[in-house]
Image (cartoon, rainbow, N blue to C red; front, side, top):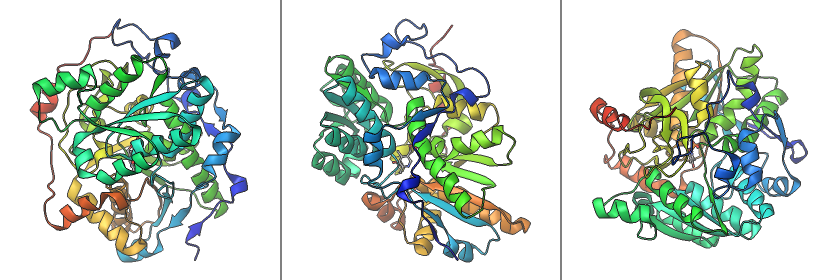
Length: 450
Ligand SMILES: *Cc1c(COP(=O)(O)O)cnc(C)c1O
């Protein structure tokens, strides 16, 4: 009974999979927030280095991973895949449950898979300093690590509620050499404007993005980095699914359903896109994104053009959105509190190729605790959404008396999120269904494009 499916280092994927040439239809243009016209590569240059702008729109299906990046990936990749025998037994399911584990990276999540290439391409392009934002701190810690490895300075605007709830991620960022600022801050115009209106603002990812974008756009030596949503981030994360496919092949299996949690879409894209490619070639495989009911972007948002940030400084993309000024409640899965979604994932959901489901916080923590007690690993609160999805699929298989192969991505560990578990056990966590009127209200502020 094999438990760990380990790919040798020599089999680390040497190319990322770019889904753009295989999308069901052309991509919607990205719109400049000022002119409301499609952006040109030059418009993006104050924010991103040219190699990443090129990846953002590349139609090349396979993109080589530079050796300098592979050398660092190899510190924790290939990542293991596990068969969850003990969880299967406890559930009494005929289903096989596999999970790909991304918590073994130095930062404890999948995010370094994109942070490392982003720092690398900035370095070779001549960037000296990175400005970015972070929600729960996973992206901030990942990019701090990556900047440290390539000798870049790093400033991280961290959503205030997380800065206070999760002080240890701040410590990790500082250890790796970054300057961490709670957002909203008085360091930027965007932050000062919010603070003038809401002095006690908890912050949001949208606000922190505005601050980081403003910082990067106003300094020649500085560029911006985003940990999710964008096409190049999804591209880098496909190393997860490519490894998982190779691991499935090693044991002669193939998933009926592939599951990931969804915040901005990057770990989901990572595990899912290589399987979506198979689906386009006729393979029977379901692909399911799980999001929190308190920030139900894919399931209750609209597919429309919207700003990537609250202050309307970031580019406007066609995506599922709850409105750029949507303010999600301070749930513990901080990495899933974003009003928008990856345009690529959005287009696939809209085309009916990817399924989306919303799940409540308490059911996710239930699933995470059950998982930890069987499998040992303590999941990040974000990842618990994927576990909920996988357990529900396994229980359905039991009900239907069907064998089924389930693969989910365990995007990170929860060692720095133990406050969330303490609150769960103390009965302090609630479920939250966003009122329809409030979603309607924030959706009434979408920009007019075209
Ligand atoms: C950031 C994060 C997420 C959500 O981000 P995506 O871009 O949707 O993947 C999920 N899980 C973990 C562990 C994270 O750190």
